[in-house]
Image (cartoon, one colour):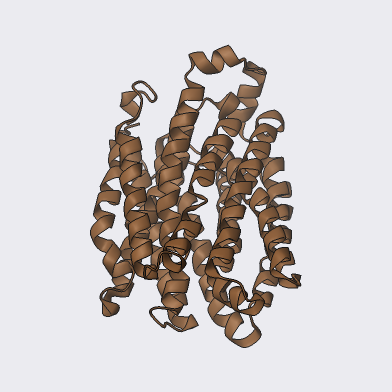
Length: 409
């Protein structure tokens, strides 16, 4: 969708209820990002305490991402049935308490159980929160809102890096997961202050039931399949970049926790800036350039990201955040354009989390290339990310004819 200039600052247009709805989803994704990322940062410590390999700890990431699909499906169905607000609250409590329980895990098996359950709430949060935020926001600046929403994951990642640098050296990795239980308190202001999506209310009145024939005729099913494939490859880029990067920094590059936290911060500052920029580009010039151009530019930045020039790891971290993770800023806008409101929750829940399911094996593949195939972790990361970027471009450019109106691309 290409926008046109409109008089007046975009941030003056939303009403107070619209800002509150967006803020609820934004904070939910910040906290979701924090709770997911602390495990990535603590993987090396957890593996050491329980005597397990990187393949085993990376496998827990895979399990988390697999279960996200169930959470997305459940939240999407509930969001289309009763509204976006209730599943958002349930999901935040769920993922916060499950991640907090990791602090008390007596064995690595229990870590797997709690992190797998965490994935269900994580999947539900994005589905409910993204639909609430985008439907509540004024249409003309949804590209910027899309980028701000997805960029909030980077805020959570930064907070996780800061918490890791402060907590783990002094107290060990377990108290880090106690902090992860705090997001459950967010449901109180959401319950009291946030209004239900007006777009959902209108869709519920006008089209209470949907038939399979309608989904086929409106190309909803085709769009779900294409969006799932696109997100699967795009997620693989992100998880290839981040899944074992902290382990690379601490292991091959010998960085201290404080250095890791600083580099993680740079990556996610880049992600936030890139998400907003890509969201804006998508709304003005189309989805294709907003996704394709950054991925092409990412490839020459990868050697810097994995430390081929030790003094420029910081530059690689920043560029990888902008170009590799920043493309996520297009996703909420793209899904809002793709799917009609009366099936948006279910469609987004399926496409987003099937994409995560496809990408779930990426950290395990990187770990296996390192431990089983004998590749240095740096080369395993570069190879996985480059392949995922190429596949993302292929899915994007070879999309089925008519899957999206060309005016939106």
